[in-house]
Length: 384
Figure (cartoon, helix red, strand yellow):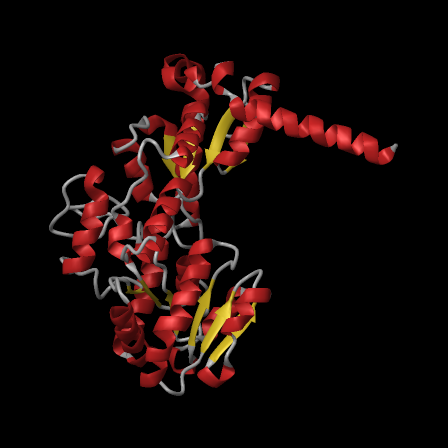
């Protein structure tokens, strides 16, 4: 990957379990290579929130449950971050959490969200009808959201909008997902979307997420196609521009204090709506933390005319400000260049990262080697 004047090897690991399985090979075979972890969402945070939700916690309560030091998933994820030279973090809130709560050095982290552009010719509002939702069915937060939507939210929405329909898109929607296909109730399971251009025909995208982490691709894709979004605080998390009072990713609230308290800030911002101009000007509505509030927001957005255009334009503005492809890729390139130039010095002063390369702490390496050996012998037996 030519980032500086000189071609230097860079190895990217997609998610921490890829780093666990393969980084030792890069470390042994090409020790000079820069090892970059592409974190995606913070898996341990998502799973901690999922466990809290399944135990009966509300959306806002689940958001205030960060993983504890005894969480094995957190331990594995942090170990991968420490072993890597640089970690790309999708959400600015999770980057703040890693720095403030889990003490990851800032020079080992780089905010790398989505890189996108707005659609060139979005469909006019008057030609848009119905609701849609989209998400990979194998991703637990998406599956939970669709179940909540179909069982608790849609019947109430349909009572107020009897002619509206709900179209559900997503990969891997065979089998159990088909139970939600109920045309008589206005619910159609469409399955895999061959093109996201289908978003241009809908009036509102519903993203009823009760738990999750990272940035939500469905929201960014909706904005890119001129489609306002009705979601929860989980859905909107990390998708706010910086202001004079708050860094990027945080809602503009009067209660902002420090990155370390961001989960509590989210609770206060959503519960009390202490927002300075962002409640109405986000790319949709996002503060509903229970079924009744979500239904109210969804119906309001569907019926709105002037506000609908405001939400659409705000979505375009947020795309340009937060996810501009050229600007964001430049930030990542600069971070990679800095690590490449300072790599040797950083590694010599990275005591935690170097400690984790001790053989006694590399159980994942030997597990990976055992799987490889097992598969090798199995293939030899099969070909005999």
